[in-house]
Amino acid sequence: RDTPGGVLPEDPCIPGMTGERDMFSGGECVQTMTCQEYRDTIYNRANNVEDDLGPIWLDDAVGALLQALEDNGILDNTIFLFQEDHGQESKGTLYEGGLRIPQFIHYPDMILAGSTFDGPVSTIDVGVTILDYAGIAPSYDVDGRSWKAALTSTALALNWEANRCVFFEQEQDRAGRCGCHKSLSLISANRRDSTTWGRGGQQGLANDVESLFDLCGGGQSYVTIPDDNQETTNLYSSEPNTAQEFSELLQCHADRIVPSTSLDFADCSVTPQKIPAVITDEPNWSSITSTSATIVFTTSRSAQVRIIYATNRRLRRRNRERSGFTRTRSKNGFKGEISLTNLKPGTRYYYRLIVRNGASDKTRSSFKTEPALVK
Image (cartoon, rainbow, N blue to C red):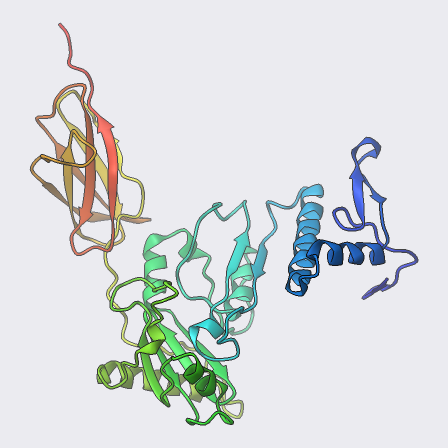
């Protein structure tokens, strides 16, 4: 019964935990058990599995909170940010298993359900992002960066994913990640000085004093396959230029966070990576007739786009490829279009758009021409 506001005279009635709503009495909460009785239900539901006690209580608490927001009509206009703790053996280290955690956002009024964001973010970004959603500009310098705009712009999301730098410290060890590359600098190769060094060796990870990792395994996307950990291979010697750049990156960050010096909130960064062009929205077919059609699309930057089309889903015996450029800049990227002629009336065509030197394409979509005119 002890709360920040004082001691409650009786156990609180919380729908979904110590009570239930009575819809026949205006939705008032009806007490069904005491707090102690509710705690006992957690033990019973855990069925003697100690590791399940916390998740059961957390699930109940989150459900009760969401229900309270919904009951008050403010759930869709509330930012609900949920983060989970580390659950891997490398917890307490500067390896990915000790740094990466799941983060879920529920904000129906502003964030599309089921959407994802693959860019690296830090807990220091949470506060400034929430302020951004609230339309509040901080009156002082902050360390974090808002990812609000990147959620609705493919171009900004790609740039964030490739070039955002985040930094980490544990004991006297440091790490920094920009895009796919990550640098790890340990104070010494000694278990007493570095937990990261000790646990890294136990798990078969590279634990040299200076390490460089490519978390994308030579590709463009973060590798998440459990049996393909990219932190087993140290690229520090094989990529000396990148290693040197990241060593300077870590030193830049270290110099700017010394408490005895004047604070510098400017970003420490490496050479920006070139962002591949991608199609940023669903292509739109316009001016469809019985024998012709024009497709309109948007790319993240000026690029050449090709279309392959055929009357079968697998695009076999495909028609000659047609190309188009995106040159006209718009709010969301670069607009372009491709016109197709000599099409068969009343026929469904399947197509694929390919961005030259791009990172992705739109596949297995279709359109249908108008039936032939009968005179």
